[in-house]
Image (tube, rainbow, N blue to C red; front, top):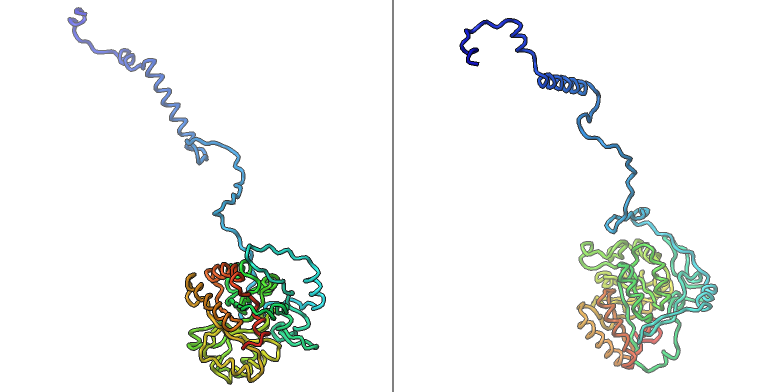
Length: 390
């Protein structure tokens, strides 16, 4: 090496320079790899593949199965929309003799709770003999042989009961048919001797009426009457108005009386203004009398003329002695029922009036269990009309 360093520098030949530029095997392999990679990238770029360069998995996807859970909303059956004030179809009237054979020819199994006195089932309504077709549906009427809807639809008179000297109590529960849950609760839990007043509104009222009658409950029809403050305070469609023409009120009365069949009489719903107007009451009470019904006053209007107007047209009427749930607490209702018992002992028969609220139903059901133990008999409202008490 020392000899090489001592030698003078000499100019490299072209051959030497070319030899210096010749790549090594490693460099050659690297160059080939780079060229191949670049070519592959260029080819891939020219292809029509949207997912080129990404991992792709191919698999078969089955249609999704609809899973129904508790939170899945249920489809409600669509109901036909009824135009306002249209008349629901009325059931066909049944023959009185055939219906009597059905009611009394079948065995009725009644399961009662301890202490609860059940009532005899009442015949299914409507009864052909005391029904007629009106402009809006079936109307009550007197039969050709003098039968009245009051007699036909009332509970059968118990002569031993009428001769009994025991104090008697009749109870009317109003507002039925408006709330289906409370109505069914009252029908199921209350003794059959308790009378129900049904509102003339709602759908499928007749089946509910017959369900109540099958358990012994007599039925009244609520007549909406004009209160003070109307129309701000509004009982409902077809309200009988003190200021209306007689023909208009009688037309409304026909509409209201066509809503269902099976009632023994009618009772006011509100009506402080209407029942204070003798001129408005007279033609309405005449129609009620002519159709063989009775009238019941809920006692809400101290200035009511219903008693005097009813006497003028010879319409049988009775009125409430004690409102049992003006204060809607169990304690207050129990006190009112005690006053009702005292009234019955003093008069011989007393009438209580309440609304179809859950607290009223529960308290009445409990009270009725022990009523006979205190020497008092629970009776249908019709007994008060047959007793001669006014």
